[in-house]
Every structure is written in structure tokens, then in C-alpha cells.
Length: 211
Image (tube, rainbow, N blue to C red):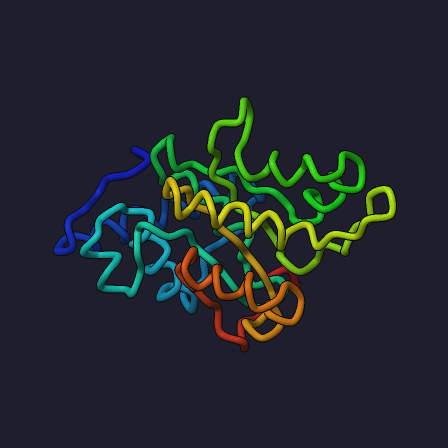
């Protein structure tokens, strides 16, 4: 399947019906034969696929802006990481993000220091890079030579500046609520996140699919 078919809004539902089985096959390839897409998640999947389609009308109909990244929230184990990993397969090469654990970024700060902020604000060769930071809120506050730092908060502030200046996208997954994000990272970060992201949420009742 091509990375992005760009269906018009009138054919989006037909396109989605073709893409869902393909995505499930890719999920089985990546995660094993037990992987499946759940019927109860199809409304949420419809929003993610409208975004991935690149069609402004289809995305707008589902309350999404193609200018922003995706903030996928929901309870532990509901499938956020696997869906964001699969979603990237539908995107064109220039938008195909790398999925990185927020804990991985945080521990890199412990080793390297503040240079990590710049590393994950751009990418190899200081070129802008699109990332999906996975599990925001699971990373500890780190110290480097006595200085403490809320690493992901600083990374998000730096990437906000690049979003404003050059349209660089960022994607996130998290178990945190908006109030918990503000408590952990401050009002400044939460305010900028509203501008940077399309909020796509599993219901609070979503089951842990790892069981």
C-alpha cells in the first residue's frame, strides 16, 4: 500500500475500510499474531486515519488540523504506542516520524546534559526531525552535574519554537490528563501544547489490551 492515498472526503470511508485490514496485518507483523484492531476503537482510528490521509476536508470534519501534531492520550495499555507506530507507515517520507520513549530522552540527558535538548529539537546533522515522544510523564526529573531538569518540558518548549518558526511537527502519547500535564510541566508547557497538538483520546474506560 502507498504511504498516503489522499482520498477526497467523499471516498474517505471507503479508503478507511481498505486501510484498516492492511494496518492490522502490519500490526501482526510487528507485534505478533495476537495483534488486532478493536471495533470499539474505530471512531478513534477514523480520526487518526483522517489525519494520516492528508486530506484537509476529511481531517477538518473530524476536528483535526494537518498543521499540528497528534497528542494521543488514554489509560495504560489501551494501544497508544502501537497505533502511533503503525500510523507512521501511512505518512509520506518527510512526515514519517521516529518513535522515542520519553524515558530514553530523559536518561540521555543524565549522560550528555543539556545538549540532549538540542538533539531532540532537531535531528541528525541539525536538520529538523519529526518525532513521536512516547509515554510523556513516565520519565523522571534528571540531574546533570548537580543541575536538575524536567527534560521533556524543555524539549517541548524548544520544539514549540520550531513549530512556530518552521511548522515542525511533534507527536506525543501519554496517560496523563491535561491537569496532570500542567502539574508536571507547568502552565507554559500546557499552553503551548494546545497550539502544537490535535488531541485524540481513548475513553477513560478503555481496557488494558495487554491482559
